Amino acid sequence: MDYRKPTKKTIVEAVVGVLKERGSVDTQTKMHSKVLEKLKDEDSAYKLSAERMRIIAILSKKVKVNIRTRSVGAAPEADESDFKKQGLGYDPVVKRWRRIRPGEDQSGHHHHRGEFASPGQPCPVCTSPLKKVHNATLYGGKVAIGFKCNLCSYLTGHRWREPSRYSFSLKGGK
Image (cartoon, rainbow, N blue to C red; front, side):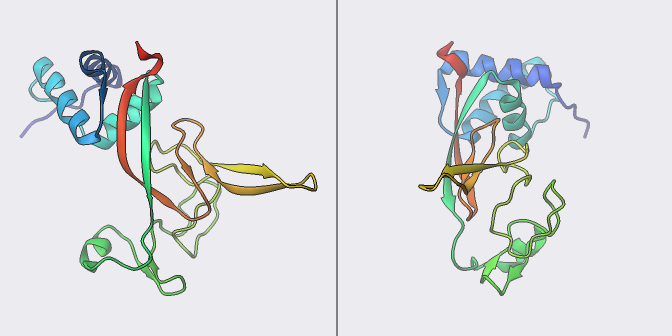
């Protein structure tokens, strides 16, 4: 079956159009279905993943995405075959499933304990590199307290927090 990928400009126009009609959308699934409807009106052969829609919307800087996160669980989930299909492995040192593959971050740092965040690691929301967040000590020094994405405002401590829900609205309330 033939399909077409919409251009970034077309996707941004569809996302902005949906948000102008609705004001805001409280889940990525709803947003994806509304944007896909709008795109299918233009060309019925268009296909678009929810992740690509989210990343392009964030990169356009016209859309505000609120991110709710959750802590990575303390124990492995019951169905191991799903994790193995995704390329995840169980780390016996920290007794958790690894959320990243070794050497995956952009700084070239190799990870041995996958649920810990590091600078340069790709943001799970928009794929731009994470930056350290510092706090001042009482003695005038600095201490790293977590990591933040400068583009989408994803925030995590040293322990990884995974995004669990996205809500979309236009920047500036236009």
